[in-house]
Image 1 (tube, rainbow, N blue to C red):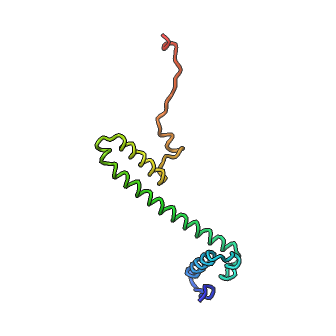
Image 2 (cartoon, rainbow, N blue to C red):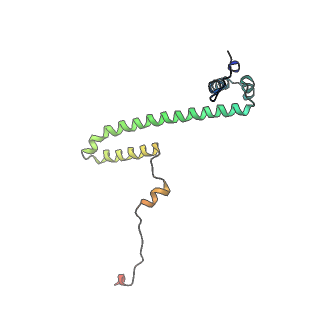
Image 3 (spheres, rainbow, N blue to C red):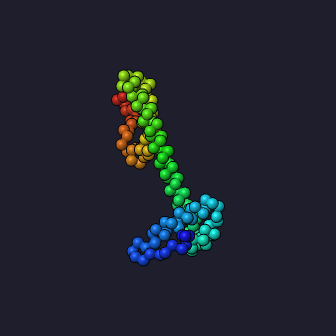
Length: 138
């Protein structure tokens, strides 16, 4: 049975399953090389722009999921390297401690935890330069 032939449902949450099936079929047809226009005609969408938005949203979602998976993988790698260096750093190995510091900084960048300019800048200590006075010259 084609998606266009699925029955419509009455009620408050009507046609959510139908809409989901149509979106999935639209993405499937686009990956098979169908044009947006022909997909809109096949599935009963009002125009090709709707199909374009459906496909674009699906690609963005897939990309976000892929980025999340990559972020998780890289975080696990950083954790493994840090765990391997930790005993040496606690024993006083300066190179291991510096490597751990770089790992922590990399993790913060990866997870978006680095300082933002507007918020963190105000918390940093400031240096004030005062010109010498006549008393300082003596």
